Image 1: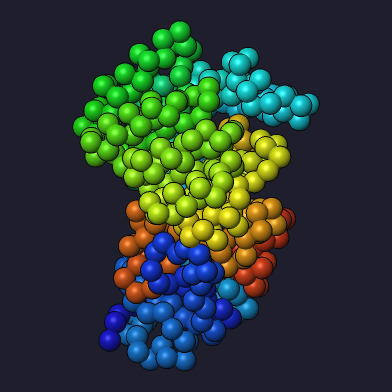
Image 2: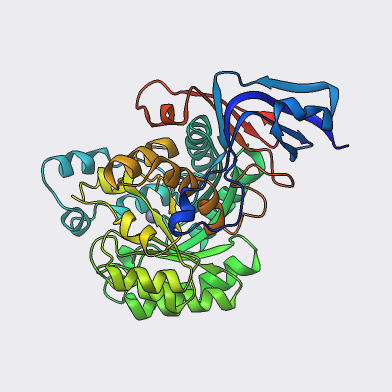
Length: 414
Ligand SMILES: [Zn+2]
């Protein structure tokens, strides 16, 4: 009989999302529901998922925390697989310019965009970077995120990239959210390398990647592959060298145009290709064959006024595993909320509610290589859960949150 020190019981509905990862095609709708359900855990690990009526099968500690979830729906803690939350300053002026009609390229060509954040981030202290990012993680946690990825990429010198990654490591150590670190030295070519961009690629490959790997500061290597940022061959070179150093590849692809980045993801065997606003049937088939996760970021598309969202329906119908992220960042990632990303997925990208839930949990976990421990509610995985007051649909309301509790490793953290 398993022992338990934490218990959720009498949930109207539990969407466990249990089963194999990643979910593709029709299986992306399979959220495995259970009525009048209970979940028990011990020391942060789930030991029981089943009917409340069968809890006699669990030895519940007298001092166990018990959550009565009558009238509630319980889902796995959300996994946000794409964020840039370690930065200084803000880009509110740029946002106003965009509202007045300026494009991403126009803003970038005036020294705005990423480079503006690079200047502010280089000037900030470690403590300032840590504290501002911690506040953003608090907001994400309140919205139900219990695991997230964070990228570097606002330093763009070896020392400042390493510094950002050390802040990310400290966030993982001190915050309730589990943080997965990604090195994104190839986010943008910094001002001082604009006339010799090849030298910057060489710096990323020959100096930054070996240092990041030697200090074990990142698990993944990412590249912003786009016209005006990093070219196809540069992206292949950087991600290949990253792989050799032990940094697994993921990437920004096909966000601003049909750049060919999706095929780089296939070529280097990336775990994810993110954004994908401009992909067609052939791209989707190639991604599906290589089992590359499409990490879709509709919040960014909205705030960038991209005029479109990624073709989620096409990607799911062609068996690409689809995940969702917030892309929280100072330029266009203005929401910490995975439920808001799900709302846009449902009402802007024609995904079903069930597909969007799998995208925000199990498939996102798979895209970060964490689906063995998080992303669904099943014995052996972490007790990371969100208790929603009401139905699953109540997650999609914009306004006062219907999230009643957030649970991380068997503790109520929000
Ligand atoms: Zn991004």
